[in-house]
Image 1 (cartoon, rainbow, N blue to C red):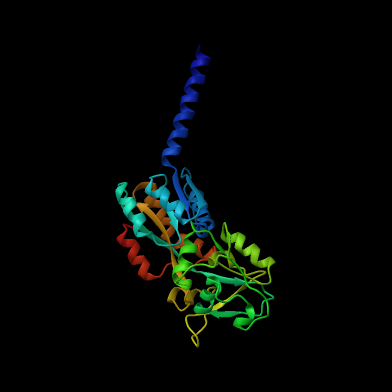
Image 2 (cartoon, rainbow, N blue to C red; image 1 turned 90 degrees about the horizontal axis):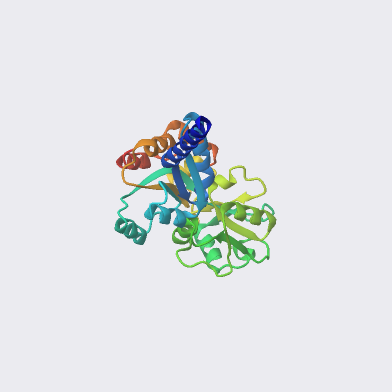
Length: 290
């Protein structure tokens, strides 16, 4: 009987421990662009804070935002702004959305290294992905049809690139890939290929050309690999990388967010190939209670 009682108490103890961990575990979902960065931030944080538990999964910005609206996660990673429709849905569900900016991204346009094109204007990039320019010879390159690689519609990067660069609809001929890594690998194999990815996915630029981009014809070209150009906005395809939360953060959630925004967290941001947030967003995050 004593042995049976001991086993029962141990089982109850393990069950309590598991439930306690589950209750304290932070759930983070969303953007493919952010997943490697936030996974690394979570790893470093948990190493420094034994007993902290953080789970990070992807699925795209839309997936993360939907999870936040339905109260299925603590943080939604999003490489775009939430849409008015999503904000209204959140409000209907009793979710008080707060936005936190944790890094800056120079969204990078990539080509095969054997492609002679090394720079393009925003207008030319938009025409390529709208399907109005279909051959590299039309922008000074080889007489080769252009193959486009982009994201699927649940991706925040898909939405941002469409709104900021295309200012119209994507060509039906664009290959829609599941993530940044797939685009990188596809372009490495395709001499006629062009794609767009978060700068953290091209930090070593091995086997790729990362194009310099100008905001307009006769404008100054800038590289997304240059931190100063991204933070100043000189590189024209720059965006903040966001995390959305419900209400003002407290407890473990606030502590993790504060770590991300700390000098240690921002060092991880740089190590992962992205860029620290500029002062304007530091002030913005303060308004969110951080």
